[in-house]
Image 1 (tube, rainbow, N blue to C red):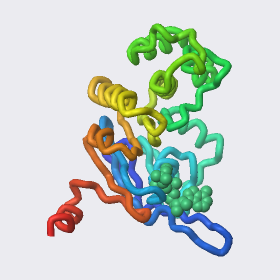
Image 2: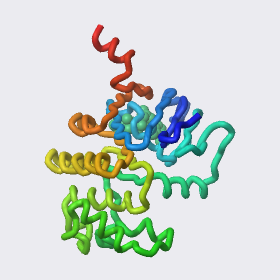
Image 3: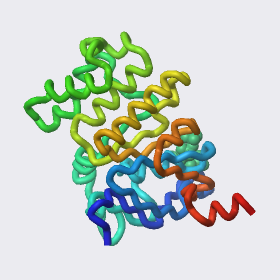
Image 4: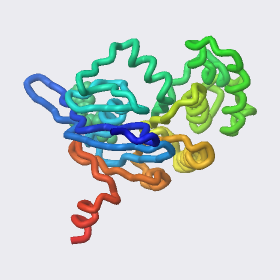
Length: 241
Ligand SMILES: Nc1ncnc2c1ncn2[C@@H]1O[C@H](COP(=O)(O)OP(=O)(O)OP(=O)(O)O)[C@@H](O)[C@H]1O
Ligand SMILES: [Mg+2]
C-alpha cells in the first residue's frame, strides 16, 4: 500500500538487454520508495545501470519485470500495461526531465524553449510562467537569446525552467552537469538544492560528481545493476568490517 507522501514506488525492477546471443542484465532487482520532497542521487561506475534505472523510473523505457507506481497509480506490473498515449500523458504530468546534453531547440529563444511543453496544453499564462521561472533561475537577462548565444550553465538553467513549466511532481536528471566545468556544475547543484529546499521539489538525479551527490539527502550507489542506499545497514556493516 502506497503512502500519501510516496510519489514513487518501484518493486524488483529488472531490465535485460540482448546483444546477439548475449543477455545483459542492466538492472538486477531494484526496489525503491521515494517520498515527496526527497532529493535522491545515484552514483556508480559506468555501465552499472544508472541510466537504465532512471529511464525506467521516468517511463522512458519499459522494465523486463517488476512493478512501478507513481503518485499512487500503477504504471507497470500487476497486469497493468499502459498504452503509449497514457504513458505520454504520465510523462508530461508527473515528470520534468533534464539531461547532460540540454536538448534545447536551437532556432527558438530561451523563453520559447521554456514555453514549448505548454504548447501541448494550449495553456494561457505561458509567458508569465516562463518569465517567473527564468527570473527565479537568474536568466531574466537571457530570455530573448538563442541557445547558441548563452553558456552551458545557462543552457542547463533554461532546460530546468522548461522541465518545471508544467509543475511536475518529480524532476529527473541524468548527469545534469556532465557537460559543465566545476564552477558551472557547482552553480547548477545550488540551483537544484534551492529548488528542493525552497519549493519542496522532488529530485532524482544521476551524477558522477561526488560533490553534487552530497547535495541529495539520499545517496544511492549502483553496482552491477543493483542499488545500495548509503544509510543501508548492510552496506554500513560491509564497509566497516
Ligand atoms: N540499448 C541497449 N542495448 C544493449 N545494452 C545496453 C543498452 N543500454 C544499456 N545497455 C547496457 O546495460 C548496462 C547498463 O547501462 P547504463 O547505460 O544503464 O549504465 P550507466 O550506469 O548509466 O553508465 P554511464 O555512467 O556510462 O552512463 C551496460 O552494460 C550497457 O552496456
Ligand atoms: Mg548513464
